[in-house]
Length: 268
Image 1 (tube, rainbow, N blue to C red):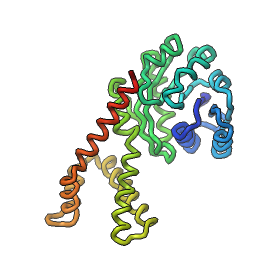
Image 2: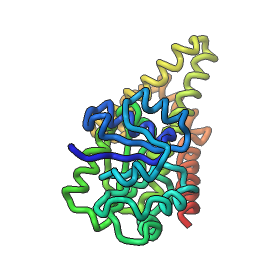
Image 3: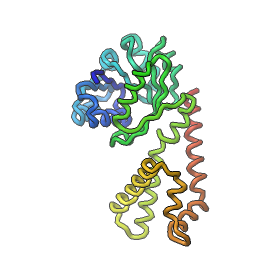
């Protein structure tokens, strides 16, 4: 691929995506540019990945064939206002902020551009990201395939209807935080039973990793996989019963609904 990929914003998500792209070797580091107001942050990114960095958003915007806006939702408008007249006519704009829809992005640029609304997550940094995308009608099938290829360099990709993007935020965009909390809670329980903290984290994290891989690799229903572990009158069914009594599933579903509602609120 001979494209220049530009990022505006060197926050956690932007760095995770850059890390995934560079580590996958889909692009050479010199094909990736990143702009941010923080020189300190850019120095870290440049040293870690060897990409081109600049404090001038316009410098990145005018050179990018694919431009990823990886900034906080509250500064999307001023960033777009700054770069809208200098981006390439055939640039592909990828937005990753919750609540920023395609029509709003088009309105900000003042014209119809090729826009892809995306929702990645931070596991992109270790090549295990989950990104959902909704492209507008300006992109050809070949260009959509190109975007998918870029995003697959750091994980899996799903194409969804844009109206589902708020739900995507809760199921994959924000959910690593829930999983980290679950791992931390499991480790706390292990420490309570005497297992050293560092071992507890490794054991809990590997259990989550392996379980997720079983769901993806076997294609089996998660409930069926759960049943395989639950022996009659055994330790696992005892734990599962306690989780049900304390509202484990209800708590997760309620948290996700709150996340989706917040994303909807941010879109207004």
